Structures are given as C-alpha cells and as structure tokens.
Length: 82
Image 1 (cartoon, rainbow, N blue to C red):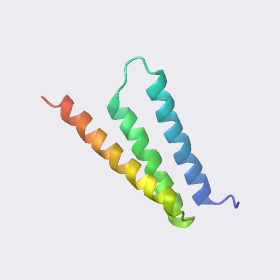
Image 2: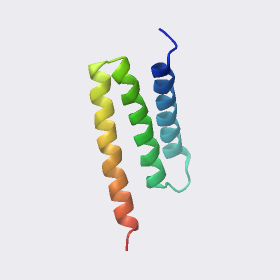
Image 3: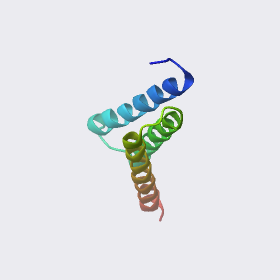
C-alpha cells in the first residue's frame, strides 16, 4: 500500500465514520444533524479516496451511505423546522 493523499483521505473518512458510530452509542441525547453530517463527511471522503483506488463493492456501499446520510439530514432538519 502506498501512503498517498488518497489513502490519507480514505483513512480520515474512516475515522470520521467511526467517530459518528461512537457518538451514536455514547451520546446521552443524540443530535441527528451532527450524526448525519459526520456520516456524510466520512462517506464523501471515502468516495473521493475510492475514485483513486477504485473498489466497486466499497463504492456502492459509500454511495448508499451518502444517500442514507442525506435522507437522515433532510429528515432531521425538517423535524426542527416549525
């Protein structure tokens, strides 16, 4: 494995996704906007990394993860709007 920018970005994306998962399990009161923004950021960073080091299965998963995070973000913002 080369330690290039794409791998660094991918590792950062994985770290952000793990932070979101840890937050969802440890937060006393879950803020779904923060949770979905973290998941979205992690997925987008991983997608960027996958454009350099392509893997179809991982790309499909990250695209799905992005769609779910966007839907969750939309629903969270919609619930907060009066």
